[in-house]
Image 1 (cartoon, one colour):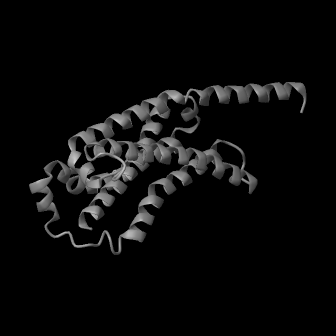
Image 2: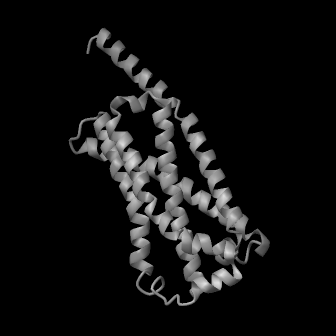
Image 3: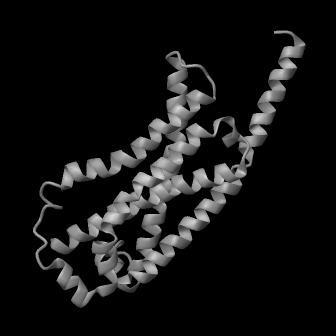
Length: 221
């Protein structure tokens, strides 16, 4: 490679690094938005988090909603970080087995890991616990919640299906923007922000779904 080609390649790499270095802004916006949404959910369904009892034995009972918030938020961020790391690993493996080291390969890697983020946790949870725990009879549960914990009922019963189904539009938004916007996703802060919101929204939906299922199981046992 002659000096001119080397200089051009370095310039391209620097431009790409500069583009991706701006990601902290959309990520920060998405984290803040998810944190606020989760805070509202916890504040309006306090009894649900008392029933979950996250940190039981270590956290005073009156702080169960706080520990529940921290647990769900940590799970949400952990999944997003796992997606980022998993995408990097998938990209590396794909390039080692013959895929070109370019943006389409990155998109494919990110899409595969994203689908794993959406499907894998809930699928494994239902396979492991759906047969005997989640299948426990819940006759009278909704009435019991309505009479004793009305603020928990809307989250555990009314919103339960909506939380699970929200993964579909979130996946459509994320994958559509990733594949339909071409190289603009590397330059547009708006597209990056929407992608970050869709990704963290997906992680939050999965974390909330797991928390809801765990609370229902805890109540029945």
